[in-house]
Amino acid sequence: MMNTEHFDRNCILLSTWSEGETVVHLRNLVPEMRGTQTIAFIDKSTGPINNPHDWLKDAISLNKESFPVFAYYLSKYKSEEAIRFFLAVAATWGTKKLVVVEKRTNNRIINVIRKSSLALDLMLLEQEAGESIVFRCDNNTPLRHSPYRSSEEEYLQSWCGVRNGKIANSDMLLSCANEALRERVGFSFIRVNHCEPRMIGYPLMYFNSDVYITTRIQWGAEDLSSDDLRYISYELQNSVRMANYIGVPQIKKRIEQKLHILENSVYTLGKNLDLFNEQCCFTNVNVHLELGSSESFFSMMRNAERIVLISGRDVQSALSVRLGQCTIESIPLPAEKEFADRGYACGVHFPTVYRNVVSEIRSRDLRGCLVLVGGGILGKIYCREVKERGGVALDIGSLFDAWAGLNTRGAGFSDRLRLSPTTPSF
Image (cartoon, rainbow, N blue to C red):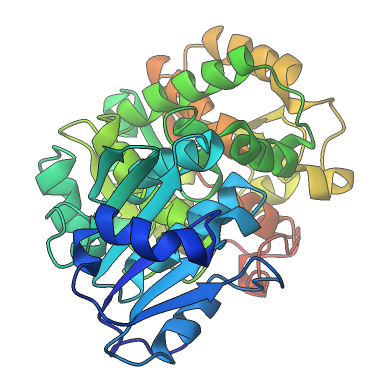
């Protein structure tokens, strides 16, 4: 990534303006430009923009006394996701004041800007000016709750209403889960990272096109109705609100890739939708992989009255051997679409399998039962249902893949996480 620590200046982003109409018109719309002698008009109406960071290179190359105006940048992008990414880069990579001027008739871009300001938690001031709408984001006077200016603990406590925003370690999570097992009371631990914010934030912050990225990854589907999407969003929001422990990602101070926006959205959604209950505790979103190599985790499984696995991976036999023939049951799910051929063959996850699994959970008394869940975004809902039936639900997600020896994430998993019949117990 390029170094932009010396880039501290005002700049303007336009969508569909020509240079001739810009100079005079913008001086009237944007007070920051009045008195400026030199306007650097950078026209991207022709030629591709390969990377949203390219505009920073253009800006840094300009004379420091000039006022950069970037035309046709936003209109180059066809998807809402790409426009949001461009705005995120512009707002978090050194601009002193970002001004976006759009014609009132450009409803699509204006709608994306408005939703993006919520997803990015920007202080975006909107002003109508004749045939134009002016958006301003001043990074020298940001709202103090901006995630780009806060630590995870500060943001959670100051703006999400939780009592303790410290990011706990795996031992603290296991201690609370163990206590719930002993007392035979409900407990839910879920993880919220990349796929969940798109669905939770629909339609407030994210569009159908965003949500379909998640549904394609999870189920290979993008034909869900708006009613189905709103239903899943509602159920996910309630599942977050009822969780005892939530795994969250680290806040990203500068946006370098699209996934960073989703990671920060976990926090902005928490604030804007009042998702986190006051007593909720937090840990790192990747803590499930730490559990996979934790002797305390396997000890907790042995001490549980029963274990139920809700997953797309058939690891029941291997886990039973690892634990020493504990009582283990399985509720099978379809595996994630890309890896469906290496999991249970039981149909499309939503809606049919989902409804059957919810009905199965609701039919059981799960007090004293440890339920390990790996079900993608719908798995968070299963965790809530388990808690309501008195069980202890842990969202361990891709740890099931690691147990099965399947490298489904990034560079893969450590071989020591894999379960096999020959793996000795601790």
